[in-house]
Amino acid sequence: MDKFRMVFQFLQSNQESFMNGICGIMALASAQVYSAFDFNCPCLPHYNLAYGLGILLVPPFILFLLGFVLNNNVSMLAEEWRRPQGQRGKDPAVLRYMFCSMAQRAMIAPAVWVSVTLLDGKCITCAFCTSVPVETLGNASHLSLSHGEMKRVLARIPCKEIYNGQELIAHEVAVRYLRCISQALGWCFVLLMTTVAFLVRSLRPCFTQAAFLKSRYWSHYIDIERKLFDETCAEHARSFAKVCIQQFFEGMSTDLAAARCHPPRKAPADVGEAAEKLLGITDQSTMNTALKSWHRCKPPRHLHPTALPSGNGWAGEGQPPTQPPVPRREIAAYYSRV
Image 1 (spheres, one colour):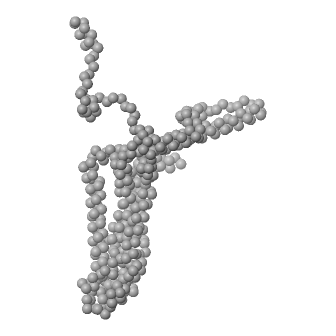
Image 2 (image 1 turned 90 degrees about the vertical axis):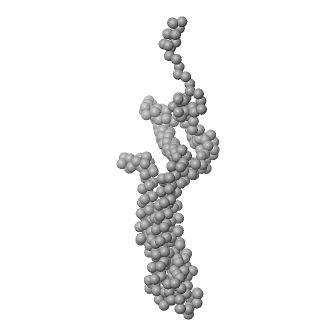
Image 3 (image 1 turned 180 degrees about the vertical axis):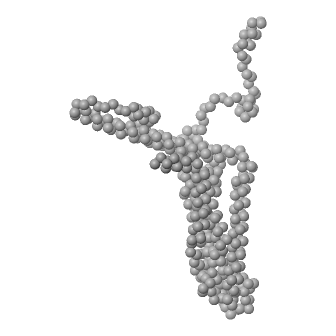
């Protein structure tokens, strides 16, 4: 049990690394799921496009939502966004930073799925097989088929075993043409995502360093504040339950002592320590009021610090520097000379 507790504490203290690992596992899982997926194109003119684009776009959307679901900061972001104003203002830049951080991690698995799907080429072949330029790649003199019949024949290109349009266009030529376009789109997509990730991760802090540091600091503050509040509530609940149980057994002991004429036992010393941890909140209604107050009106982020020296270049800018106090020895020497 202690080992599991140590692992849980490690994951809590290294939540960012843990979430990066989860996103990497989801990316590998998405590639593995696609490799194990049995792709069966319907080979019908009105269904190929929907099936191919559905396989290309629907699973990435599901993986994107799963990336948010598995992120513990989603509830924290929603709570910070929907909480009342109270004595603490809400900074939209911090909320945007938190959302962008979660979105970047959640987009890893969908990007891997789209990349693998495009590089494989089956979805594009199924979706756009009816758009193959027969005039360029096939037999342009084969004019005995109507437009609907030609679409019906071209829709069977992904299904090699039932394709019967060799006279119209060779099966291998059409498949190679569509797969070439799909792989080109796949590599362009990989290049685009890599470039965007590089710009976001590398160049953004360079242009807005002050805003970036401020947003990152307060997002960490919100996360740590919530964890500490949960830990304090858990400790308070543990002390509350301990005192309630002890009082129950003390009452039972008093009743039994009165019935049997035995003196009641003294309460252990740790019960007094637990009562001190309650901080004066000793009933359910007071605790509910405190929780509501925390939600509705969180305390301001102002700890009344002591005055900082103004000669260090960053505190008290725009104010004249104060003169240091004269030592008492110099004052006494001056008056002795006078």
